[in-house]
Length: 458
Ligand SMILES: Cc1cc2nc3c(=O)[nH]c(=O)nc-3n(C[C@H](O)[C@H](O)[C@H](O)COP(=O)(O)OP(=O)(O)OC[C@H]3O[C@@H](n4cnc5c(N)ncnc54)[C@H](O)[C@@H]3O)c2cc1C
Image: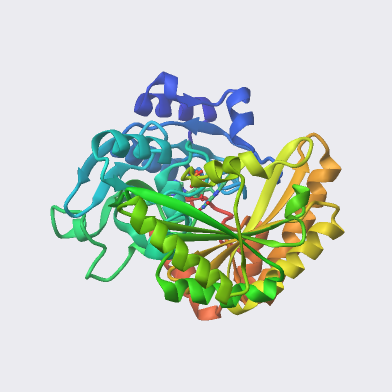
């Protein structure tokens, strides 16, 4: 067996001296994320530049039976890139090439480290008629990290959740072999996901336990000439399902966000609605806004003329939540994301607000309609002071309680931290669980890929 210095030497031989480290300062940074998770140990940080380098690292990890944790931006907030059983964090940000933009089939073929900010600015400059799906997350997150965790964002009401917008993947399997999934498995083009048996889903929401994605093709969409946001207020969460169904039936909206916040003070006690319409001219958008106001009225939502500053913030797509999220000293926040059936959304708002207030945290709840309102993704956000361990623990308790409530409501915690994964496994159909375990054992007999995730036992 190789010792740590020999492993370091082998990794340096693969990626070059400047791109691997086992120094305490680097291990310190990668041992934590901005959320409420406790830090955990890291042995090495490595930054490959190519698929071949990823293959060599994975083969070495197999030889020495060392865990490998793939990382993009490391910003899920739920500790997903902090190793559970130490080992090696594979930071993919150097693999940041945009390899192809196909304007006709409308997809971009990119490496796994391409950030949402980079793809957005590349398209704005070179393909201004197209735009990518983008979460309201900082621009340093990766497109891969987002679609691999079933992310969603401003195109999701109209076109679906982002995971479904993946046309193809190149994956380094735990054995070190490279697999191509989607139309690219058969064709020279990455234009579609099928029609062949769909294996792409296996790599989504599996949190790096099935392999390392090195390339992906993501769908692109026509950039509208004009986008407008219309604000409304609902007096009671009970009214949300009716509004959501009416908005969906109207076919007017590209994106709908709802929120309930105790801060700032003027927002307290109402459900805040933001509905986005798009069009090819000011005139067509004006007409749509008129129709949208009618849908609001029919759904008992009061239209609200928003202050210009607020409108500007929310017209910026993606919205950077930092401008609205931080109401507490110490700057920390984490949220339970959850997919929840529409009929349970009123309960989710009421219970979420109650959990927040009981923990002394200003309620900050939000939701986004996705896939033509066949699904709602809900955010139960808890702020905390990073410098105060008791305050962080208080947020952790609120997060854990929320995960349990989500499951009781029939929802599914999204991008769940270890505790949420265990709760999900505890409720999962036993045959589903067995199938998942069998596939994982088959692909990864040495259990090197992000071990501890999606496992019931520590
Ligand atoms: C302020 C804020 C707002 C946010 N808003 C949204 C939002 O609107 N919508 C939304 O969807 N999310 C949102 N998020 C959550 C999250 O930041 C995003 O989903 C983000 O895109 C995740 O990407 P990442 O590169 O940080 O992923 P990481 O945290 O690096 O990785 C996520 C998971 O995928 C795995 N992984 C990453 N890359 C690979 C790879 N190449 N191969 C195999 N596995 C891999 C990791 O191991 C990990 O399990 C928000 C986060 C913040 C902080």
